[in-house]
Amino acid sequence: MQHPERYGLETLRGDLFGGLTSAVVALPVALAFGVASGLGAAAGMYGVIAVGFFASVFGGTRSQISGPTAPMTVAMSVIVTTHASTLGEAFAIVIVAGLLQVALGTLRIGRFVVYTPHVVVSGFMSGIGVIIMLIQSLPFIGAPAPSGGAPGAVRALSSAFDSVNFQALAIAAVTLAVTVLWPRRLSKFAPPVLVALVAGTLMGVLWLTNVPVIGPVPRGLPGIQATMPSIDFLLAAAQPALILALLGSVDSLLTSLVADSLTGRQHSPNRELVGQGIGNVVSGIFGGLPGAGATMGTVTNIRAGGTTRVSGALRAVLVLGLLLGLGRFVEPIPHAVLAGILMKVGWDIIDWRLLRRIHRIRRAHLVVMLVTLALTVFVDLVTAVAIGLIVAGMAHAQAMEVLELDSVVSVPLLDRAFFAEHPEMMAAADEYAARSGLVALRGSFTVASAHKLVTVVGADIGEHELVIFDFSRATLLDDSAAMLVEQLIEVAGRSQTKVIVMGLKGRVAETLHTLDILRHVPAGHIVETLDDARRVAIALLEIDTPPTGV
Image (tube, rainbow, N blue to C red; front, side, top):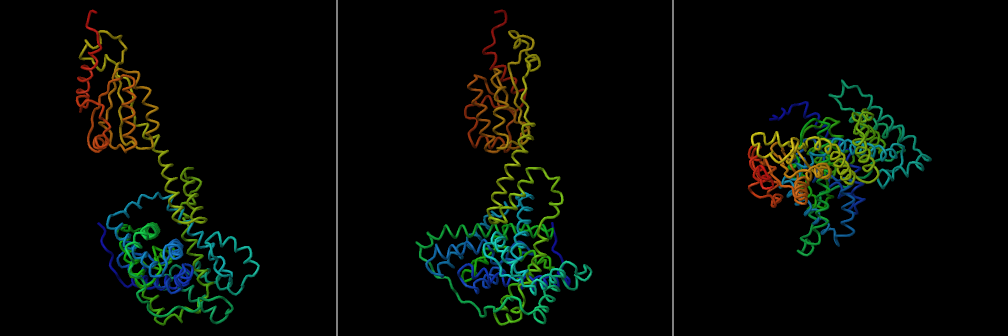
């Protein structure tokens, strides 16, 4: 059992720096997402406050930062233009999506994300790092941030190089240099990200002033924006709300995996979904963008020292303070400063630990990682993970096929050995007769080996008058493998080979009986031990054994 760590001055300092740094970094992103969604810049900030605070307090990932994300913003823009006739209806859909997330967490659906293979996690982590670096490459040289994600950044780069703002480039370069070169021994007193933020901002304020800055920040508290929808609208809104809920859940839980990989901790996926759902309900009520776990903000928070829920809650409070009048303190921060910071963040997100071993990775795993990385960069995170999981599952099935087939024993049983104590059974047979065969399934059998098993074992069955299926050492049969057993029994029937089933127990027996696989096997032919199988075999084979002397 893990005991909670003592919350001391060092932890508080890290959370303060983490919350402050992630708040400043998140501000321009939130404003941009609000505009892109069609709801306005303020909606992005309201989403940062509501989702960020409640997901931190009630969620299951201690160091996670939540707020508007690119996938959720794109989904919300579709809802605004397609599924809602008023902004009140759009925010009602956000509330329903949040309630669905709470339901998913209550039903304990979130735990399934832990089965994501490491190569998939590595692929989308590295892809996110590449995206951050590509997108920030334009503000790094003084150009406006591109639309269209990483592909848009690639398209815009060629023309941006023709009009480089060298003042912005100098600020970004100095900021990046500080984050890279700041001495490790001083990091516990002042995190490099914060030092870089201050140094780059002072350059922009006191010396190189001809650079784009964050600019005006919305002020004031929001009012209740969602309207009470009709029953007909709720029925029509079920589909977009479900998509929004699933998108936010997957996005958040994937970010939780990133946080786990950076902190060495274990998140609670079901609690995380409940926290994210509560945050989205509150955000929808007050007219904020829906949100999820924000990978960029989470990594920035962790790198700056944030390790507990306090950093995420503090970030939301700081953004609230900006709304209430403190915005003038961040308005002069150059975009180039944030670009320099995020360049280092993007570089650190890339899974260099695995990439350094790329020449040692199995080819199938390498394909999974590269496919996931490419789709993350050029399509979107959710599609990348979905395809990555499918490809990883196929690669895993291919590897398991060999292991499972190696656990199958299909051998003839010589009469002189099997019926050694019953010489009358060998009277009409030659010395090397093998009227019985044994098919022993040992270990686990899944869809990976189901197809090949019919081919490998099916040919042996027809060579015997009787076959014994031995499940005494089988531990697992999935539905596909269970249907395979039914096919083998049907093969035996077509060959007029009698069937005995031996050693059924536990989950294997439950699966076969639940699917009614053994309906054509008489109850008397289902036995527990090899001695029982021998007695049944004698009774069955004596039917066709000529009397002695004939």
